[in-house]
Amino acid sequence: MNDISTTVDSTHPMISMSGVEKWYGAFQALRNINISVEKGEKIVLCGPSGSGKSTLIRCINHLESYQKGVIRVGGIVLGHQAKTIDAVRREVGMVFQQFNLFPHLTVLENCMLAPLRALRLGKEEAEARARQLLERVKIAEQADKYPAQLSGGQQQRVAIARALCMRPQVMLFDEPTSALDPEMVKEVLDTMIGLAEEGMTMICVTHEMGFARQVADRVIFMATGAIVEEAPPAEFFSNPKHERTRKFLGEILGH
Amino acid sequence: MGRDEFLFLLLGLKWTVALSAIGFVSGCLAGLAIALLRTSGIRPVERATAGYIALFQGTPLLMQLFVVYYGLALIGIKMDAWAAVAVGLTLHASAYLGEIWRGGIEAVPRGQTEASKALALSYASRMKDVILPQALRISLPATIGFLVQLIKGTSLASIVGFTELTRAGNIISNQIFQPLTVFGIVGMLYFIMCCPLTIYGAYLERKFAASAR
Ligand SMILES: Nc1ncnc2c1ncn2[C@@H]1O[C@H](COP(=O)(O)OP(=O)(O)OP(=O)(O)O)[C@@H](O)[C@H]1O
Ligand SMILES: [Mg+2]
Image 1 (cartoon, each protein chain N blue to C red):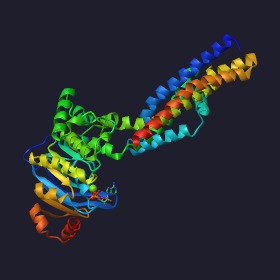
Image 2: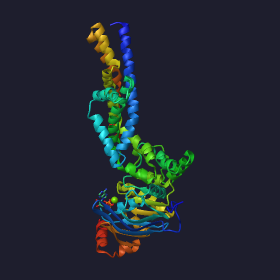
Image 3: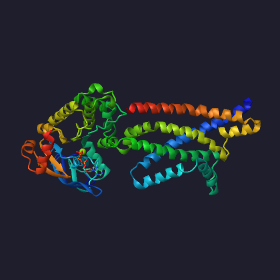
Image 4: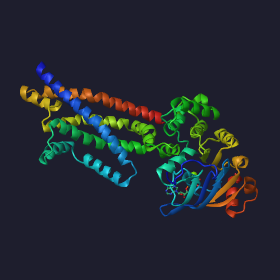
């Protein structure tokens, strides 16, 4: 038909970014980003505020466009055509710091919407899937409530279930616990750990270093739009190579 | 004032209701299109719709009706008074409702669009299922406020010879020389239509303010 592939192909890395650069006007937010993530790998992305972590993961599902380089998800080359963007978004789930649940829909409806509209599932199948995933994030009994009636931790777990209802190949997390009260952080991290244990490919922007130690295959440290250092967590925490990494770790582990 | 005179006023009232309904329904449809174009993200389209809104908000409805009825006739487009008023009110209402709803759409947090994009929802589904239900809810009090203005604005249709409530009142008043009684009744009839809407709008506003907390 044409050379644009829109199906995921298992011979490629799950995600690859090569030479990706992004500008906001004259400001360069991403500099020569090269990342390859294999299926089932868990990456933790950290770095100081403004270093471009959100921008990086938002390029993967094209919430942000980029000016240079290539991003592949599965075998799909993420171009700027609606068709490939759509194909990629169906394979990539995202969880936001502010949950972004749909406030006018119940928890169940939040989870059913995308399977109904984007995957065109039947109502019964979408509902069965939604209930199953709400069960999995341990919130099935709240299915008929509205988001505003739930605690932050519960809302974030619904957001995770909502993304999982698309049966994505990859999950992106952008500081999923930063907006939560401390006592709710654990329930969300536990949900993410469960997901990691089941083999989900994940990229998590987080400053939860305990989580990084426990589940990450690699930790990537960014500063001023570039990747500074990339290492397995044991090495990253015990033997950081760059001065900037040491300074950053000193700041977040110090208190 | 006799029974026949009163029935004549009710006949005028019927046209006022019909004009308001036409203006509101077709204004809603066209206004929705305007609001979507105004927020489309396509620069030239946004500019053009901003111009359309500015034009119809910045000129009196009276003049718009004049132009549609007499002006278009001059260049050979003949419309009867009924069609001209319907077109004029639609243009007018679509500009106001388009602007009200643009505000509503822009008041929906960006995260809602982002989440629905991340879930691979199409533009149509994003709007229909996520953004518009929230935007219309936010805009409902202002929308009702505009409907009240529109009902009263239909009185201007009398200038193109349309016998709606205000003109009917005028005619009767000239026949029986009791302007106070006649316009008292005309005023009451407007009030009976508009007041419940105003109260309903205020109620919705309180309700949303409470649920936003
Ligand atoms: N829409 C935008 N327009 C202009 N500049 C932007 C925009 N979004 C982000 N930036 C800039 O790009 C840089 C990277 O932002 P980004 O949100 O990716 O950082 P971050 O690492 O996620 O930070 P944080 O930890 O605070 O979330 C910042 O300097 C930010 O000011
Ligand atoms: Mg961020």
